[in-house]
Image (cartoon, rainbow, N blue to C red; front, side, top):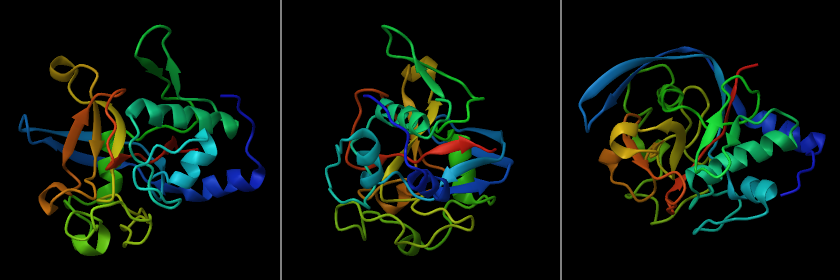
Length: 233
């Protein structure tokens, strides 16, 4: 796709979507392996909302979502679709892309020093979701998340529920969100992590600590989207 720079007003609108997340530590766990570990998170920028269909269509000129609506989160996107979006929006805003596809391979290289848009790591995602706490949710679930009991079996416009303490909306529920990390390469190969729970999930799955994974290229489903991050500048 041929790129063109975004007009200043559009670039400012994207800047306004980003929230500064301070650095700190987060306690991680995996219920499958019973493993626990602590991760250090540097300060970074994270979008207030999951990427909407309106923004996704403006950048990619397409909308794969099953539940159409400009302010609904984009879904039915693979991890690779999300990476391509991040690279494209980086180029349109005159930033350095974070990802480089390897020729003739279903792999990418990642430049952690690039100033462009990227997916959050799962440690960044969980730390931002918990807003510096160790809680599994950041409020009463009906007040903060769309899930099976209140979603009416579909996604909803972003930003309608209460945000967490750092001003981030829909971190839990509505759609799961792709993260950058490989889940467990030895067991699952290239499978990537997604977090947060979605509109179809029972309450027990919609927690800051729940981890899921799937194939980065072939897996697309109607309760899985993503939100964008950047290194702090």
